[in-house]
Image (cartoon, rainbow, N blue to C red; front, side):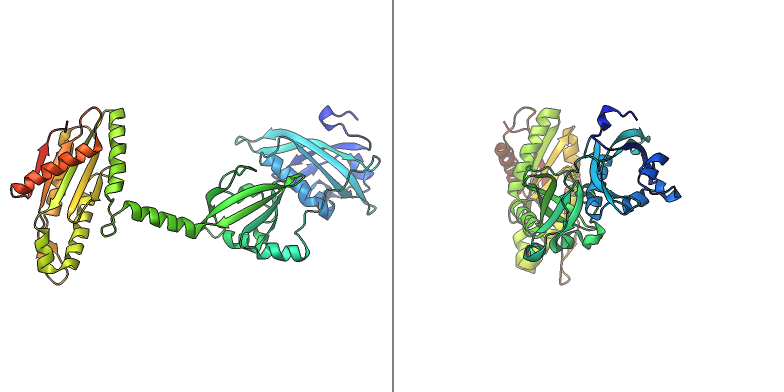
Length: 409
């Protein structure tokens, strides 16, 4: 028989095979089946039958090599394994194959290759058994607080209890599955730790940190370490939120406002839009505290802050920068009239009577100063100062209105 150079074996008989991985059907010439003294039973065309005759120590590496090829991890398929013949003897085999057909989605639906009997040639060393660690070391690894996986030929071969807890399933649910089915993103050896939300098999997720490394001298075997960083991530997000938001109202604070103002000015310069800033101060807020108490005053600030936020556009920012002082950043404006309309709506909402705990009610009023950033480069500090000055002038004149000032120079 003649074979392509890709499949040329060294010693021993060989035969072509044809595999349909979707249906699990495989075809060999009748001569090959008789050579192995397997008979002509119909089950010989089933991949399940052939898998049942592969040596138990070689089955997962063989399937891993095939899965890695089908999943696109490898550019070609090759596997060495021991196959049980009809006389009860294991024969060393070499199997090679390549794609001959794909469906419309690009999925491999047919492979063709050759299976070579190496029993007449010097048999290669049997693939090492990919089993879980044994003895005391196994107990240590199982008890480790870090999730650990052993991956061979792209397939998960072993997992400890910590990883099972992270994924939310017993090891039997994913042993033998491709690693790509468990990870949300590709992970490269030596690329450093990667923080990702791990999708649990029960539908939830946990933030984890992954690291991957090869076993020394074994490029086909990897160890994956997985650390639960959910609590650390939540704490980090909480600290970051507290650093950028007002503790009472939950609105952005002065620091976050400064960051967003700088960003809005940069975008406006690039896209040719306008930016406006309004400084607001509640009129006679001290009277509310004196009359109803500080708890009622805090409640009023929270309610008014919520009203302001719902009155502006999604791209706008309402920040609390002092006791009863708020700043509204209006970004992406096409015309100055847009800003005046938003501020008019906001002041109307703020002026609606508020019922406080204990049966009291109050109608809040605000003094507001609105300024527009110049068309060219603008200084955030100067813009804030100009809006503050415009608000103060309204306050001095009796309050309860909006003053619009030109661009600060």
